[in-house]
Length: 427
Image (cartoon, rainbow, N blue to C red; front, side, top):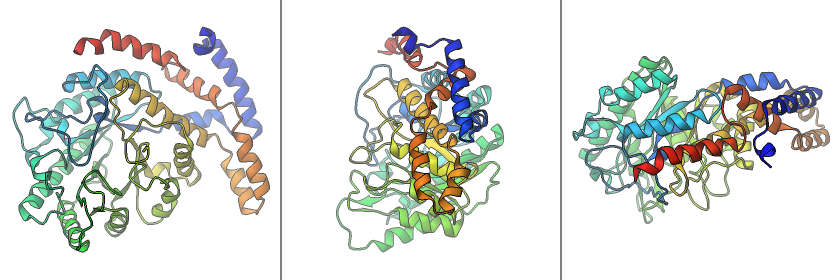
């Protein structure tokens, strides 16, 4: 049993040698696939580590239609603990990856700083940490959990003072994102998501969207070097408290992204339960410069569960590889589960995203495309089904070994040791 759960280096290497031969018969270069995998970063989401609490001096309850369930012990209580937990998560994930920050994770020395007054210096410790560890940083204005978001509206509010506050907050967020990109030498993706919507059916669907477009135009008015900051807009189907109408719908933001040539964010939990975002990728990529993905797992509703290696996740990664979109796509995660070990939630979800990407990279896509264009759908189907029994797991284990991270269930051993050593002492 132990040998199966914790295979030796020799067994991992031997299994990989056999898998490489098997894939080579199909025209797949596994070494090249692993090189591409190692070069593809995933942006981990900081809010998994503390249940979207953040570090604002005033505290406050989670709002904006968001909810976190569970009370697993060991939640990070401050930025140092959060970075400590992130360091442990990154040690379990093969490759070099990024971090996605929300504005409420500013460090203000215990002083209350309004969100429209946040500045790069409030994130200096995050930049120092990222630079020391080779991480890129991404960013998000936090347009929820605030008194001026209590009405359910921010950038689309009928109140001009409310709109002004959130416009200023988003402008400040873009400047913070620019500072990240300049300091770290890799562009920060600054993503704008708002919860604005009505609980019951409105009589005027038009006006909030007009106000939202005006607000977005104003906050994006200042041009920023794309080598430092990339702007993205994110839609949602519905939320708690906005079940009937969301101003920032998919159709609204698709039109906005195309006409303004900003990034469109597709969150896999923000659509109807019967929809998958995989089929949307090639459609939107025909008109927008780049894409931001928030990979999540909704269960019956947008409940943001830990990402599994399921058909939906594989479909997303297949589309990125088959359509040659990896170079134009930024992959991030977005879920929050407080019912399990939070470091494990990061590690399991990110490793699953990478495993799905590896499966896609191990397809003989040129041959499959040739069969399809020739109309040989029989051979296409047969080959796709044959791929499902190929020794993908041996390639993944070898990747983990080469990247110096735990293979298989050895990951859980390290998580349990970290929990006993660090998390249980937090109370």
